[in-house]
Length: 607
Image (cartoon, rainbow, N blue to C red; front, top):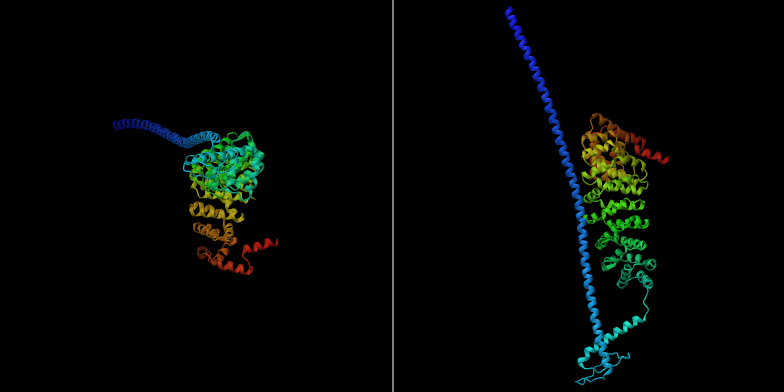
């Protein structure tokens, strides 16, 4: 037994030693596992960082490609303009050569005829070989008309001679008359331009304009004192513009005299504003280069001149009532000048530039150019302006950006556009236009991605538009109803429950009384969607809210609506959710004689 006991003790010791070794092995394995895990996490972090750097590099490359494409378009425009200028210069040189050649020929004919006249005056008149007298008009050296006897060979010479003498007489008469001054020409052109001018009068007015564009000094009294430019602009048609009226005016825009250049800039803006066709003709005459030249020296120009430049840009981008967009190439040339003007200190200039951006950003491609050019910080800065029109224009730019793709919408988010809206809507509650612009932006956001919708809910924008549906101006209420309807149709269950939590029945009851069957149908769709999605507890609460707010009464009246969609949906909601409440509502309203809403209206009228 003792021997067995000793053997058992030895075996026990061996087992303990093995257990200790096994524990040490396990500890080593644990350490190695921890080390491998740390290495794996470090490798993953490194791979993520490398991926992040690669994506950032791609993004930078994409931005660089966009910048280079804009620069390439600008360089192409400049090269095309230089080529056109070269061709125009060649044509001008050819015309000059033709005129010089013509003058030389005329001088040679003049010398020949003068020589023959001297010879004829010295020699006696010769008879015709065939004995035929030639009767025709002739001018003798003394200037008296009579018939002369000439030979058939000298007949043509006589005709040339007579024509030359008539031209000489005309030139002599012109030399005898004193040359009219520029002042007198301008004064004489005013009355014909006012009273049914002909093409001849328009031609003379354009000639005066062209003549003035080549003057170094400023003939302000002659040209603008008599009002020729306003009359010229008023009567300009496409044919008159094509005949050459635009070129001299655009040259005058860069005149050394600021007053003359300002008047010419105003005239060009008025011309471009007449129609889209005339605007395109103005652009073909390189007006963008003249405006860019003016914007390069903005600090030196008077404020009135800068305002005219901004106004001209606005009229070129939006001629008349047209909604046509500027081409990408032309917009790329104009962007630096627009940026300078938007950064100008004068309020009127900034207002005009924001209105111009509002028109430019109707299309997604144009929005991307505006975004890539860095306009959004300047637009965001103007949201805090005290002038309501500037704030409204800035909001419209943001709305156009929000209606673009998801990248542009996210840019509005990153800029902090949604953070400003609640405070701005409280501050400008009395301005229906600003509230309407804010509602447009919120509508675009509520139709965006899931993250954008949730951000709008978190910032309290959903609460604000439901409140506006109840108490806002008519158009704003319709906009908000459309936004909530879109949000409920395309949203998830969680989004719909967030609408239920806002207790919207009183606002929807107000929407059911609006004129316009489309909005009423949208309100009914929202009510149905809320009732379908609500859980039993929320459904009970919604029904109680509907009773108090007068929703059931308004839906009951819609059963007699002329629109089939509205009538059928109203009957469906009543039959499925309010069958027990219809009789109670009818009895209470018959006793009182009015619906709850009508009773409230009567009280307000008495007060």
